[in-house]
Length: 211
Image (cartoon, rainbow, N blue to C red):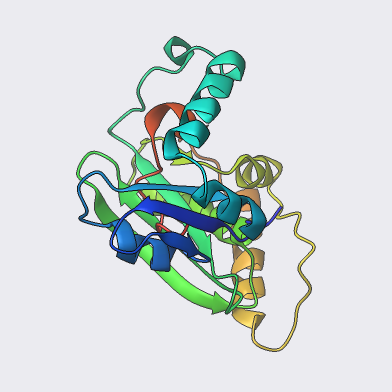
């Protein structure tokens, strides 16, 4: 599934209100001590929340998570000696980009895109395969973290199960998909591809910050 548009309620920031993109929300809260904000799935929810107390929404969410989440002890901290990857999809421009970081130093190892008329899942998939090829070239056994279960399953099956159709402008993406699938079919690798547990470890360090 593609990432849906989010709406952002800013209770305390440079200018309280409801914003329809992370970039606009970020302008209101970044560098503001005690800034209070939260994302919602619909504009209606975000506007209703603005009229309420900030804590009503955040504490209720935390209480629900405590009831449903697996204990944090089940997820030990991630291996810092690893590569973490992520992708971003622009809901307005419909383009995609992806990148990979060395987790220990937060050094960006690669960045590709933006690619027009693509999807987030494709980006997540290509990011993992790019990392695998990079590590194989450097004879490295480092694990790879991705926060996309879909992309991890595509890598495991050696096939990108996308419903995206080829069109004018996205030929490069389909060429990359074809090369990635052929690479997976022709190569073996010792690297583990692991799920980044955002709920327990925080945001994926390779995230583009477009929530």
